[in-house]
Image 1 (cartoon, rainbow, N blue to C red):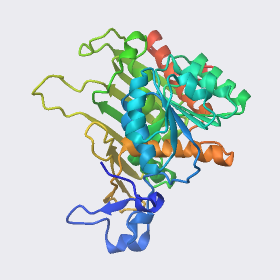
Image 2 (image 1 turned 180 degrees about the vertical axis):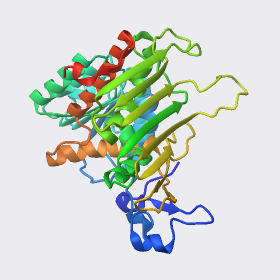
Image 3 (image 1 turned 90 degrees about the horizontal axis):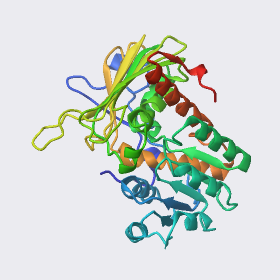
Length: 400
C-alpha cells in the first residue's frame, strides 16, 4: 500500500496516463485547453485532500478492523496525534496502543471521553451504541469535535436529535462519509464542477462485492440500505445535489446466512434537473466458496450532454480507484485517464479527519456536517418507506 509523502497537497496530485497510440490528447487539443491535457498534468486534479496540520489530539473509540487497519493507519501517515484509545475489549485497545504508539489505553470508552487530553473523539462503534457515546462527548468541555461513523443512527428521529443536540452544545459533529474522499469520486466532482461533461443525464454506482458484515448487524432490522447503500446514496448527493424522489426495491439474499429483509438493494433517484441515477448493491457477487474466481467490483458511470466519465472503486481489489473520461468540450472526445497511487482505504480517511480538525481549529464548518448527513439519513428513510409501500417516495414526504 502506498505511503504518503509530507507534501501531500502537491505530491498526490494526479498524473495523466497515456493509452497507446495516443497520449492525453493531440497538440491541437493542448492549444485549446489546459485541463487534463496540460504539459503540467499535476495541476489538473486534486485526488487527495490537502493536510492542514492543526495538532488537535484524537481519542479513538473502537478496535475493530475499520479502526485498527484504516483510521489509525491513516492518522499515522498524516501525522495526526492519537493520544488515547478505548474499546469494548480492553486487551484489543491495549494491543493497538502498543502497535501505533498511543500513550494511553483506557479501560472503557467513558474513561476516554472523560480524558481531558482528548480534543477530538473518533468513534468506530455499532450504530445502536454510537448515540450514547456522542451525547457523552457533547457534555465534555474539553471535547471540541466528534467524528461519528455512518450510519449516524438507526433511525431518522435519532439522527435529527443528535444534530440538534450538537448545535445546542456548540460542538462540531461530523459524520464519516468517507466515500466523498475516495480519489475517483473527488476527481469526478472536480470534472462535474468544471462542466466538462455538460449537463448530467444519467449516473450509476454498481456494487458486486462482499462487505465485512459486522456481527452486531445481525440483530438489526435494517441491513444493506442503511449500512452499505449509505455510501453510494451519499456520494450521489455529493455529486449532484438533492434528489426529488427515490424508488427502492429489494430482496433477501439466500447467500447471506442470517435473517434480513434488505439483502440486494436497487434504488432509482430522480433529480430536479431530470437526472436519473441508479444505486445497486449486490453484497455477494456470486458464489462464495473455495475455488470460485471472484469478479467482485464497485463501478460507477456518469453520462452528460457533452461527455462521459466512468471508473472503479478500488476497495474490493485492493487497488487504487480509477477514473477515465471523454469530453467533446475539453478533450475532443478522446479518453483521458488521470492516475494516483493512493487508495480509498486508508488514504481517504485522512481527508475525513483533516476536514474536522481544520473546522475545529478555524471555527469554520466541516465539509462533512451533521446537518448535511441528516439529509442522507432522510434519503435512506425514504428508501425504506419505498420498500414498505412498494412505490416511489418524494423526499419532501420525509420531515427533517
